[in-house]
Length: 450
Image (cartoon, rainbow, N blue to C red; front, side, top):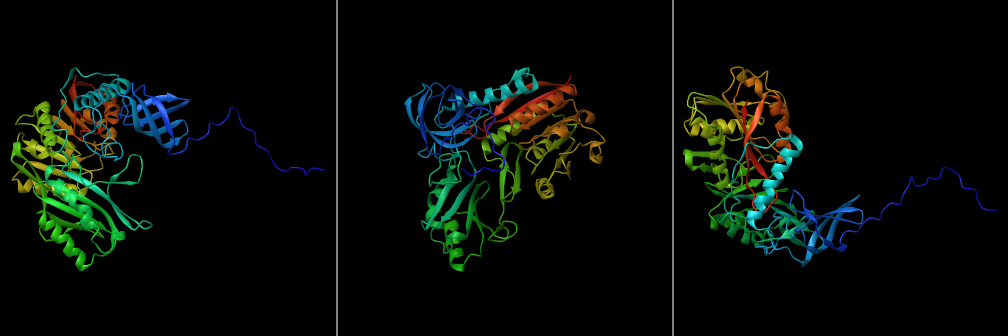
């Protein structure tokens, strides 16, 4: 007699579950179009494939990086039929390194892709188009990055220290000693960095390295255990050879090895020098940053008798140039340490018509004392999650012009909905090519009261 089965038996609710696609599987695909992030899209056997390094119309062999439900992420391994737009990637690590995703696309086509991305978000989410499209604000497509974080990890099994950048869709490290998007001043440091780090006595205690180029060059080493005297000598000699400051980040905040060392950058058009510390937000593209500030002030058209509000002011990147042109600037930032450094930057540049305040900018501004008197114009440069709560109350400040600098077209479009509700119209918009060779889009929008 057969043994009786006990308990419940579950039956499928309908249909057959599609088998998972294993990582590493190769598949031949014909790409249908480009996604907003520059990856190729193809719908194949009931799944949506996103393929890094592929262009519309191409026939490629793609290697699976990961699969989640009906979405497959993959990387181009071979191109059987190339698009007429395809160019040879200038960097030998393109396609494996996760830092650049568009090197196979000519720069003018990269700009067109980013323009389409911004226009699509504004149209689909906000239902608007600017009265005028501004030409893309761009600079050199290589040699622009003045700040970079270099990944460092000790492979215990292989007894090897890996130094480079994270791979596409992975925590793996692509060994790199030559990165064409870095500014020239950082290139020799990047080339010699791996060998120097491998000379240190406790490679397993190393975290990451950050490189900076501004008014000074600096190398910051994150470490999880105290460094030996011999290791400090190696680091000092390396930095001395490259005429760079040495910064160490163990417990607490990053500190310069030599007391009094400082970092900064210059805004030449306004004769301004801004100091910062590792960990502070600064734009990585110096040329586009200065052009961005100039365009923002041109669009805002501040007059000498006006009171202007700068939200998410950071170190004073916009506030200090504004203070050169108007009666008064009120600058607001969420992080007190940044507020303090911005105030020091104003004082060191002999600017006394700008006031800095700390406030939670995820909340409305209506109760803030500094907002009571109102403003003629507003400039805001929020993080990727935008400024929804702030923009909901902007009309109460009385500003008739607003410049919104965005690093995320999706949240810019969402916030545009609120601004239109308050009676603002989208006068002008355009992209800022802060990160050539990537699909990252920055944008600027000018709103005027109706």
